[in-house]
Image (cartoon, rainbow, N blue to C red; front, side, top):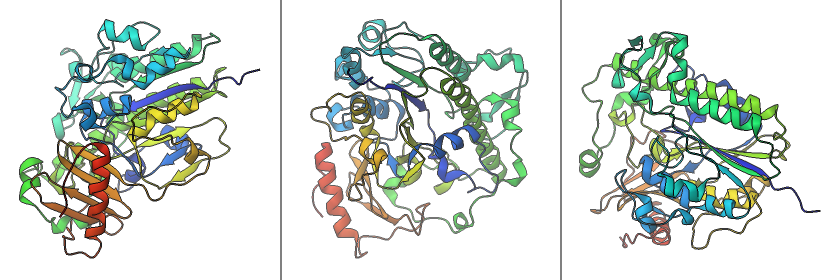
Length: 436
């Protein structure tokens, strides 16, 4: 008798920091109890990185297991399906091998579903439309909480159903409660949280005490600047007050708490369903976000806070939770899912299955890059090295300087060896950066 293939759920948060690193950094604790419980019994990859720090290009990369330079997709305006076909997405292999493939929310780019000719290639069920939170009806009762994009909160509980994540969770819950086929399933669950404008029901804002938020002391001394990065990755907080920052972080934390609430609703149903013992859950985000360091409240940069992403895998065969600190990549998601499905990996990908690391193997020597066009940043051991396309570099020790405030410079004794790792790694991902 053949072994039953595992079901797979992929949860995608939008613009989420690697939340494990932000639990207490701003004095007021981040409240995500459902994600905390999930991490306690899963494998948490603490050094996971996106391949490009922009929503659409990142999703194109990890859903195809191809690098940004293989795809030539670098901006949200670039349509991945003008570069490759739907059949080139790794989830297509699942459908071809008998999986029931179900969409739900933003996993591929955009909050609306894929156009029908592409949707029907990848999915076994119909399109689903949940809308985007920035399009809440004007007449909805709401209060402005200040900060980045004003941080509205809706004041009536009966309006909760208007949010993308509420609709996405309801759809996923209905799927889990009604799916009774013998086919294994692959289900995507895309959340809006914590993407801006950070609208939530007001009760999620009120979970946090605004007065308790504090910036890390290390920020007070400023940071080393390079002309290129200050020009290409503009700061947007220089003229903002500390109160504006506190309001902005409260809004962002409340959006993560809102997503956590709906994540918990879904996981509770999964745990009490017939699928609980045979469903692998992969949780990730497309990229991180600056929450004030380097005078930035934004994405798109190549520093640690944007390159770093949450990546958590729950395997029902796993006996207990596990922490992995080896660098890994979002481009590994496709090979990992296919491995759990008992399918061969993807030809031509530099990604690799993380299932061995869930089981107990280690790959401490790996170098993981993040690209923005021809600018490249790598995580290599304790270091982050950035090489901009016009030749300038930034070099940081993340153990000593997590916020990357002090550029160690090219005279540092480890710079040359790390640069050679960057050059070699970039070439394998499709970018020739040249030697020093």
